[in-house]
Length: 276
Image: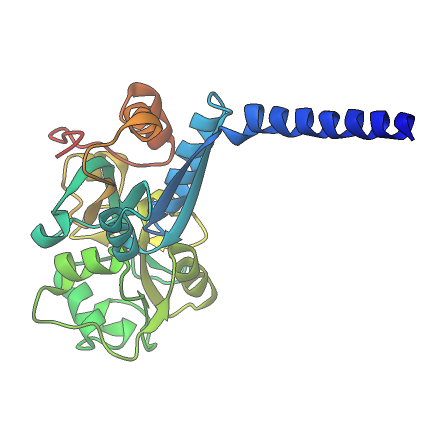
């Protein structure tokens, strides 16, 4: 009986030691939650992946949800970092520190078989408002234009409406709504008569980018502002960041983080400041 008690004590002590070891090695790891724009999400994931490779005790969770979710999550403090792909309104900025990662172009994408190569901003506005409904009105084939747009709360949509549509013109109500850049690209890729707007950072050759006002989207034209359809990618923090969050953001804004951003086609303009 005494022998059994000794064995039991040894087992209990061993279990306690294992649990203590787990807490000592893994239990103290820090988690940073990044939430918001689906356009910023893949870029944030790449930044997180690169940073974590040299900070193995840090876990960075990146989620989408839209720019409005990112702004609210930062304001509420439910996320350590909110992300937005649109300029914040004055009332949205309250209590937040902004870090502009760079500029992202909004690419007007059509099917690769579409013969149209460019539009003016006014033509684009007329297409999305429903004034222009056939591709032959802008030099293309005789086919109805199928509009693809983004969901409410999307930073890409907000930026497109602000730059192209203006305050008094609405996107046609029967436009097909998609919930991400990738979903818009897939719709355009599969439909020869479709048009959509997508993030330059995630543009690929399975769809065709139109010139706007004779200017093609590129690192150079986005950087110098000659391509007018662009918006910022922003990290948002409630108050002033501290600890691991501050260290991560400092790294993102450093030359190491900038290299990752450049690889992800996020363009820094010549007059850009790192925070406001």
